[in-house]
Length: 145
Image 1 (cartoon, one colour):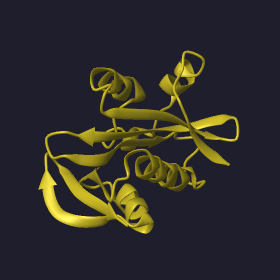
Image 2: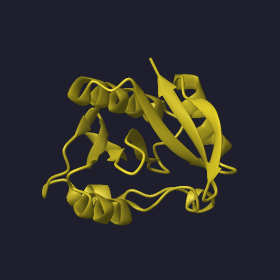
Image 3: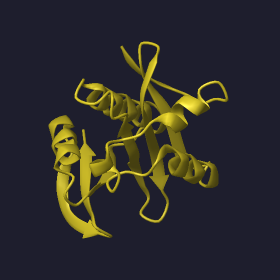
Image 4: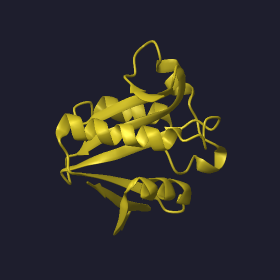
């Protein structure tokens, strides 16, 4: 069972140890960088450790982008040793449920690095659609229910 858990002093080191394959590093920030962003934007960033049963498998951060007044999937990282097991899909579903339940959102945005076809396919399979907007080497996608 995949679940999102609060990041605490007990699991911080595990979160910081998560990493992606070398060829994926240009697509997603490290967890250390993401947690620094979460600290600075603590009122609008919602980071979680992703667990499969009691094993940490990834990191997800949802957020509220004040400039555009949009709720977002800000970060999604599944550890290189845990990929292709369905954890990213389940974490994404849990993140959507979190935003829907906590903030009653009707749409969620995300940006996919140009060339990251694997992430784009994952997001599309969940229901995200391309908006046609590209900025800073990122393609915007939107989820509406």
